[in-house]
Every structure is written in structure tokens, then in C-alpha cells.
Length: 77
Image (cartoon, rainbow, N blue to C red; front, side, top):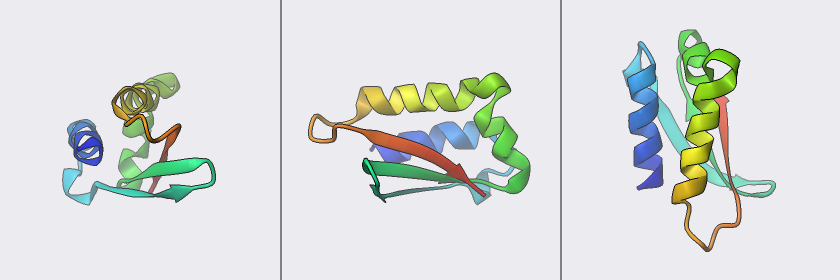
């Protein structure tokens, strides 16, 4: 559900929603979500002064389960 929510949010921000992928994997500090977008859309996902990605990370922190102490969100193209 969290992965689907992040996918939906990111698709609303980008100009090429068909290129959006959100993958979950085990990172160094626990679970992580990797957002993959087209090169042209990285700036839109990050947002001015990083506000968009900060908001996405805040939402992920709110909706994570109690079992997961930390979920990181990274962007790639």
C-alpha cells in the first residue's frame, strides 16, 4: 500500500508517468523505497529546495508500520 501511494504521488508530479517505478528493498539502515523516474523529471520529484521529496519522505514516515523503525526514500533515473 505504501509503495502504491508513493507511486501515485510521484506520477502526479512528473511529465512522463509511464517511466515511474517504485521499488522496495533492504537498505543499510532498514527498508528503503527507490523512486525511478526519467532524467528530465528528477528535478520535479525533488522540488524547489527539496520540498517535494521532503514531503514524500514525511508521508512515508507517517504511514510506515510499527515493525519498521526506518524507511528511506531515494531517487534514481
